[in-house]
Image (tube, rainbow, N blue to C red):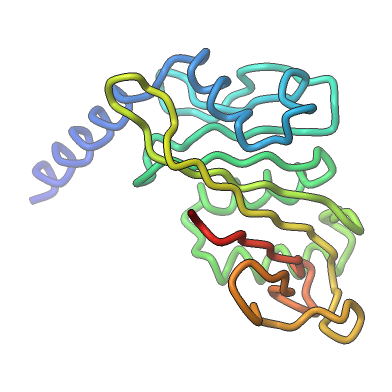
Length: 189
């Protein structure tokens, strides 16, 4: 049984790795998450031929763009302020250790509170998604949602509700925690 699972795991891994796009395409599509004026100078993290997350392009401004993860269903990239990198990197490291969402949340909460993990007092994240046209390799049905991290903020300190009052309206998610953030999800066309 173990050899069957090993063979299946290797086949799945090989299949995913064989679908890793080249660095040029990863950079081109990763920067779509960033505001236009920051795209050309943003750092880009993406995947090498072995599926490892690597720096595909050094940056000279405040944004880091993250290419689409070839092991996840659908297409999605992100761009975030460089001050969020320790928080993001720690999340990736914990996930690589097999930790689940709540465990990652709890560990980072503890580390931010203790001062071990630096969390900026405010920072932006843009999450970009769409559909890859298999013929042209262009991204169609583009959509961006906006996140503004404001650790430990609450509905009382911001005046924002803890859930969206209507489509596209801002609200505060994870209030009172290290991960408190304003969510803005414009209605999709």
